[in-house]
Image (tube, rainbow, N blue to C red; front, side, top):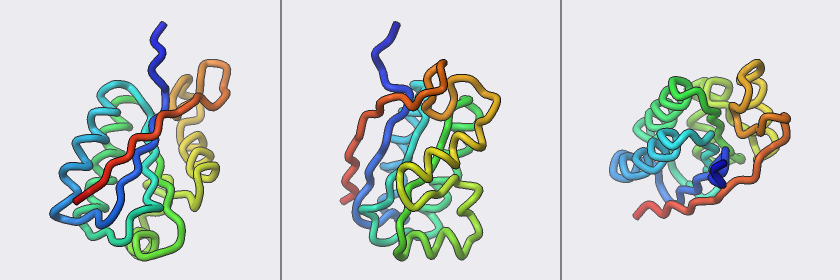
Length: 135
């Protein structure tokens, strides 16, 4: 049995824009390919543009195809206002904190055993935090 976590939380910082989103997309895609649910914590992101939102949508698409969960932690601020303006809060499983994001991810994944960071018995699995500093 593998000791790899079922859920990973990625922590980009700074701006998630045209210059920086592609590098972060590689990190998210790698985690999804390895079968992990992904939570993207935007608490350290001060700015997101349409490229950053497109990267989140692409990661969601990849996660859906791979059968793993995906959610975004996004407290109040410019990134949340942008995602809200684009009416993507529900589509991206956005929560103001980790508990809300996980709940949204699980709600979407109801009926899919082991998806969304749940272990087979339905408990929330431990996660690994991966800092991703965008420069």
